[in-house]
Length: 232
Image (cartoon, rainbow, N blue to C red; front, side):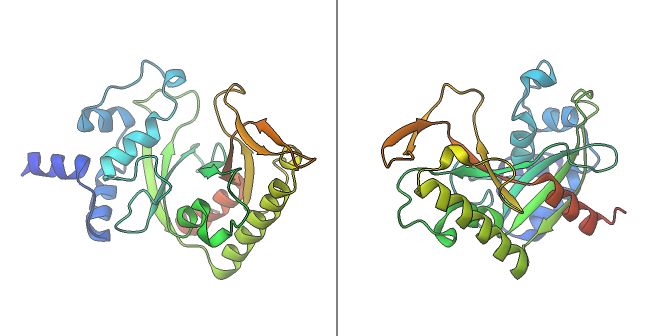
């Protein structure tokens, strides 16, 4: 029975929300070291070398199957998974990366047919106690909640999207900054500035710029945590 549960929890995508919630309840309260041992994956030598490790580990333990595709992490459930590092007061430590923001082939691009729309319409947030001074055995899964944006929130995200892509389409991508957008930001994505992609320049020419990603503002994520987990 235990071996069957191990295999199911780690490798099998959940077929319904009951199975997913059972997997979620299993990981709550466990450290990342415990979960890595359970999932039989190596723990990075330290947190500095563990970029991306937490998200990938949670995906593996919950059975997310989309990998890096521009579709929700649980395609059968239409559900995106986001792991959020928080401090002891459940305050998010950073903004939440949602997906890459294409900069080419966007002439007829709209919010409803964008990767952002598929990623944000139904989200599972998993909170990880992960202050930067903690090692993996001290980083613990604290809880989770589901988020579906209200009509007003979706309207605001659409407005953010349209404002940002109007700037991209008119050659003003380099003028986009983190202050633009009420819920969603567009920011450079990548470990360094060596990776470049094509985009329209200010005079209609093709320029090369850093790839961009969509991020959910930390203040909005904090609002969701307070609403769903009852924090004052």
